[in-house]
Amino acid sequence: MSHFAAIDRVPGDPILGLLDAYRIDTNPAKLDLGVGVYKDATGLTPIPRAVKLAAQRLLESETTKTYIGGHGAVEFGERLLQLTFGSGNALLADQLVGATQAPGGTGALRLAGEFIARHLPGRGIWLSNPTWPIHETLFAACGLRVEHYPYVGADNRLDVDAMLDALQRVPAGDVVLLHACCHNPTGFDLTPRDWKRVLEVVRSRELLPLIDFAYQGFGDGLEEDAWAVRLFAAELPELLITSSCSKNFGLYRERTGALIVRASHHDKLIDLRSQLASLARNLWSTPPSHGAAVVAEILGNAELKTLWAGEVDTMRQRVADLRRGLVEALRPHGLAERFAHVAAQRGMFSYTGLTPEQVARLRDEFSVYMVGSGRASVAGMSEERLDYLAGAIARVCEA
Ligand SMILES: Cc1ncc(COP(=O)(O)O)c(C=O)c1O
Image (cartoon, rainbow, N blue to C red; front, side):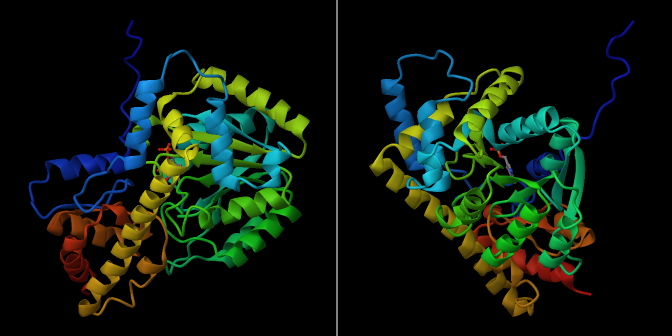
């Protein structure tokens, strides 16, 4: 008997498949706008200087590789809470928020999904349509009922009214996943006014928000991007937040993130954290240490923190410049108005509004690789290639 004979092959991740196709493309003009990692002007995903310095210090000072606890490194948790909520936030002094370290934002989302499945049985989770594809598969893998609320209309614009209308009809108690900033894949973010409206619906429908905070610093700034998270944490007694240090610390492969819980009472927070440690024990036992130790070192040292914050500013500024640059490069083709939204969007991605056919032509005729939905990773562009890209877009947009 073969134990494995009946097991079929599944298709690979479409975004990673795109990367493979890009790799074997021999066109020297090729452009990878698929994968969501930040690249500098030389096409490299750099290790921030602050991360290098912190890692060097750790190499010298580290004395053991024994396990860290179920919630991860204490200093990491404390400093991440300060970064998320602001160091003077009363929620910290009142000990109403706690961070459980996880392997990246994905690990934090998985822990959140397992927590909901185990302790809030029967609750559905509502995702924006569209959302990061892993949200769909990850929560389904946790056994949750996955539902959707509209986010972007057919005209490729954020449709807050449709979103609120749908949330009004969500069963009480269900979980609603919100992107704190830099919505993936669209780049369309809620305004402060929109957030307040969402908060009112969440409150009146008694929904539990799960805020995915994967791009702090990539939208409008480290503090600015935390605005909605802080609003919800101040206004609601119960809340889940997943934080990722992959993009803003450039720690992608070190798998660094946390699930943050806001509870109504300190005692309840302790109860919840005991459950999270117990769930994590069955998932990854204890989290990886290096990335979190680097983050704790940076956030705990004024000099390193300033250096790092400056590097985050540089990354954000570069992506914003590329957005504006692309719109300008499209101007001579008469397409600046049509693609004006690219400059207004935030974060690494842009829902360009290009059709799957246009995306296919960009790939086949110009070796420009992006996801079929028309999502382009702006962080993958480079200044000197903007004219080429604009020319290619203009060609595929011709009637
Ligand atoms: C919306 C969103 N959430 C979470 C993550 C998780 O990131 P990681 O697991 O690499 O920290 C990502 C990464 O692309 C993302 O785009």
